[in-house]
Amino acid sequence: MFDALKRLIDPDHVESDDARVLLAWAKAEGHAFKHVKGKTGGGHVVEAAAGWRAEWGSSQRPYIIGKELRFRAETGIPGDVQMILVSKVLAHTLESDVFSRFTNAMQTQIDNTLPDEMRWLAMHPSVRLPDESVLSRRFALFANAEPVMTHWLDADTVHALEEAATSWWSDSLVLVVTLNRGILTARMGGQPLENAQLKLVSALFAKLAARLQVVARLVG
Image 1 (tube, rainbow, N blue to C red):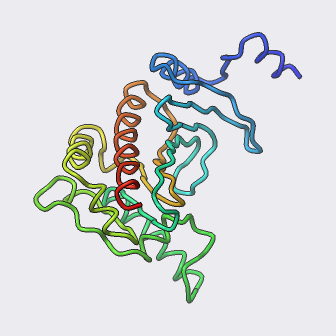
Image 2 (tube, rainbow, N blue to C red; image 1 turned 135 degrees about the vertical axis):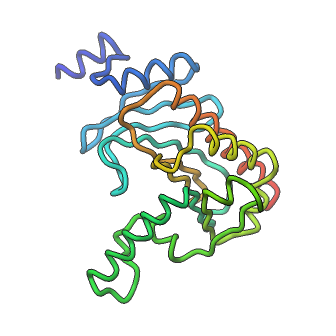
């Protein structure tokens, strides 16, 4: 009751420093900011006029500890297209985890309790990235629809990814970009949040999502 009363008096009231950073960023960018309830404590949602949204709350993935920040956007890409883009360092870590679970349990098939994207590392072929690029040296792309990925990785998209790779998307950053059921998602740790980080990641995500929406019209 008291929480509801506080939200009525101050609808933008937040409890943590990270949530305050998220709120300040949302207001500065002109995005809508909302509170959401959940079984694990709830969180916050930021909705952009461009159609994508950011979600902050408890982690939904074993490879992200504590709070998780998710960016999500509908792309219009057919729902059966699956993709994961990660740094090679993180891909190796996730693949090692999958292998460890597989061998420790002496299983004969991939564990269905694993997140989809972790299973895709073993299931889907690697998509070739532009030669002689930072992208090809440091990142790995796996997908079950290479033609869609080829359309997606036009010059502007590659340039945006290269800029991120040479400035803020380091090998130590846990950031996983996936496409599944037509939804583009970027997942990363949500603690601590920084305004500069939110600006950089959201700008890249918006470009990646916008390009996929164009590709959806091309392949549709």
